[in-house]
Amino acid sequence: MFLIATFNLKPGVTAEAYESWARAVDMPTVRALPSITGFRVFRCTGLFGSEGSPPFGYVELIEVADMDRFLADIAQPAMQEIAAAFGGMVEVTFLTAEEIVA
Image 1 (cartoon, rainbow, N blue to C red):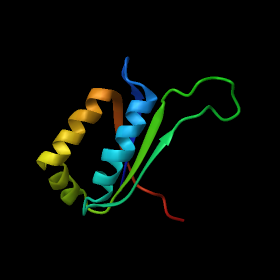
Image 2 (image 1 turned 180 degrees about the vertical axis):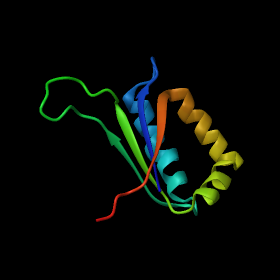
Image 3 (image 1 turned 120 degrees about the vertical axis):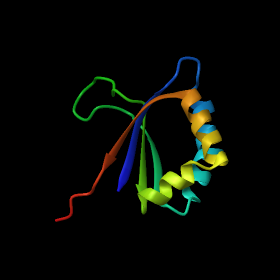
Image 4 (image 1 turned 90 degrees about the vertical axis):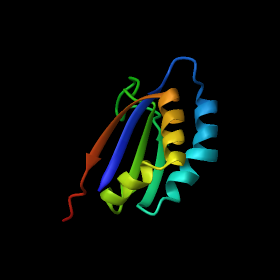
């Protein structure tokens, strides 16, 4: 199962501030969760084949090995603090997805 977050930074939040926090706090903490097998953050740089701007500034791809365990993991106080900090910096939409295997 994948959790995909698409988001833009809130007004007043700089890319440098968010990315520094993501590298120092968010990524190492989420990657250490027992329920997670992968966590990557991407900065959107453009629209393929277009001069337009992408609708989102960032995308997170979180690979969840066990959704029940993940829900328990994110209920812990340390993750609640990270979620609050993240929510203070971004306007986010979370999607769940399953990989189509050929």
